[in-house]
Amino acid sequence: MTGDLGEVTVAIPRDRDGTFEPQLLPKYQRRLEGFDDKILALYAKGMTTRDIQDIVMDLYGVHVSPTLISEITADLDAEATAWRTRRLDAVYPIVYLDGIVVHVRGDNGKVSPHTMYVALGVNLQGKKELLGLWLGETEGAKFWLNCLTDLKNRDVQDIFVVCVDGLSGFADAIRVAFPQAKVQRCIVHLVRNALKYTNKQDSPEVVQDLKTIDQSATQAEAEAALDAFEAKWGGKYPTIVKQWRQNWLDIVAMFEFPEPIRRVIYTTNAIESVNSVIRKFTRNRKQYPNAESALKLVWLAIREASKSWRHAVPKWKEALNYFAVLFEDRMPANLLK
Image (cartoon, rainbow, N blue to C red; front, side):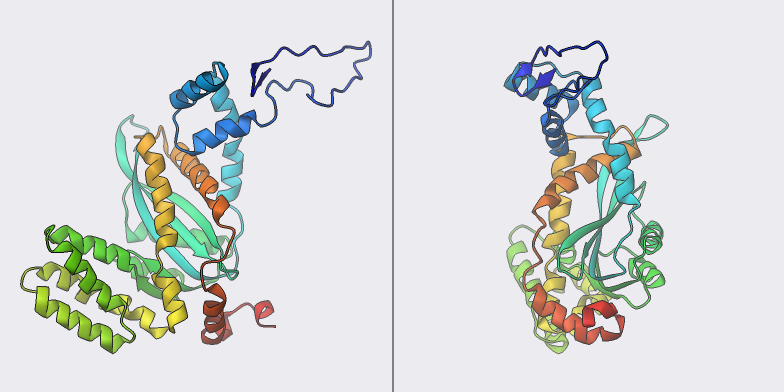
């Protein structure tokens, strides 16, 4: 038997009728309780089979075969499938949608970049909840519509605010699936894109000036700040100004809400923390053997990270009070009683 102390020889008493039932070590159990969890924890942190073998050998002096690791992780398939098809809440005040590139080996044996689509919701209790993971060969608004349709098929009826990046046609896809949802462009993505066009010396000042726009108290103040940014930087960085002008309606959507809701919408730390988990995981795994493996392993990594999502997002009660007033006709009846 394999356990924390390495290989352990167990002498099991026998009786003529075979009625003896061991209490500490059930019959046919070959690994002590907790051993599988340790393997899964290492697996969830992005370690490869070879990494796990080396660590277990260093710690316990036990050789763990790739077959054993596969057996331990095989049970995750059913659990991951159940998670991906589970029923969801009817209403989510906020949903963040984003995509991150991973490399997957296809049926033809070639490795190619795929997009891991991520939907992260904030439920009515203010707690973060990973709603879904999907994998596509390219990032596009059409595929996002399939993802949103999947959420609807799993009982999501309404979303108040959807925070997204700047994918062309993305907002239209959201409005097809959830016509009443407000679309808010992710400011972090916009600022990050702006840095692609600025030199190193100007970057800190450009970022600070862009933050002045989204930190404005009113839409009129934000428009004045954008005009000032254009006057200052438009000649040197016209592409940045063009991007903000083109996406202006979705940028200023947050000014329709009071400050407590704006603060929650603007805080993109939620989706960024999920993306950082995926990036950290994929740094160790340069590629995945197939699409199902990619989905399962990324889900496992996020599941480990989500153990810290026990508390509501900061200032949630204050934001929920405003949600209840602004979306009174769309709030679940039992919450308003």
